Length: 322
Image 1: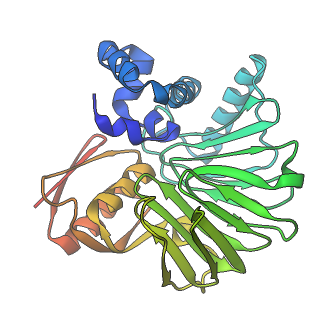
Image 2: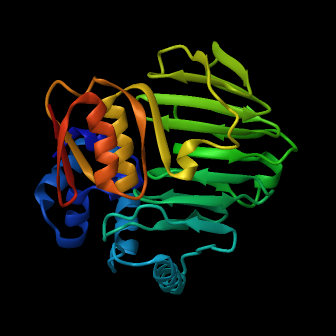
C-alpha cells in the first residue's frame, strides 16, 4: 500500500483507483486493512472517503452532459434524504469542469452533525458555495470546507483543506482556519492554498492577515502573496498581478512559475482525476507555463513539451519520462 495515501485528504483519497476498487469490489482488502491499522489517526479520513465513494459511485458520469449530471445529483440527493441525511442545494451553483472518472466525479454536500456543514469537492470538479452571510467561496478540486451554519453569521469562521477563493462580504471578522495557518479579513477577496507541502495566500482586494505561528504573522494587501513550503518555514512575501478579479484556476487555467514538476502534475491529477507517474529524477524539474481544463492530451502536452519530456496516456494513468 502506498505511503502517499497518508497525506491525502478525504476527497483526494476517494479519487484513487485502488481505494475505489476496494470500497466497491473489495480488491486488496488485506492490504487496505493493514494500512488502516498502520495509520489509525487516518480513520476519520478513510470513513469520509468511503462515504463519498459509496454515495457517488452507483452510476457512471463520464459520458453525462451537464443536465444529466444535475439530474443524477438530484437523484442521489433524494436517496440520501430518505436515509435522514441532510443535503442542501439551494445555495449551490455547480460548475462542472473536467469529469474524467466514472466513479465519483461529483460534488458532495452533507452534514456530519446538526448545523455543521461539510463541503467535499472531489477530483475533476469545482464548485461555488454561497455562505449564510452572502460571502462566496469557489472551491477547487480535491478540497474540503467546513463551517457551522447555525452560528456562521456571528463567528464567520470556516475551516478548509485544499484550495479555495474567497469573496468576503464586508462585516465582522472573517477567519479561514487551515492545518497550516489562519487567514483573517473583514471584507476582501483572496485565494488560499493549504495542501501538504504548500501554504499560500494571495490577496486580490483589501487586506489579509495571515498567521502561520504566533511569531510568524504578516499582513498583505492587493497584489501581495505570502507562502511557505513547510510549517517550520517562515512566510515569504512576493508580488503578483492582481488585475484579474479572481485566480486563473477559477476559469479553468492553471498557471505555474518556476514550480517543481511534482507540484504541477499533482494539480493535473486533481483536475483530470488521473494518476501521473514520473520517471526517477524529473520530479524536481522547474516548470513555468500553464495547462487548461477540457482536454487531457492537450494539458499533458503543455506541461511536457517545454521540458522536452515525453508522455504516454493509458486509461487513467499518465506516464511522463525523459
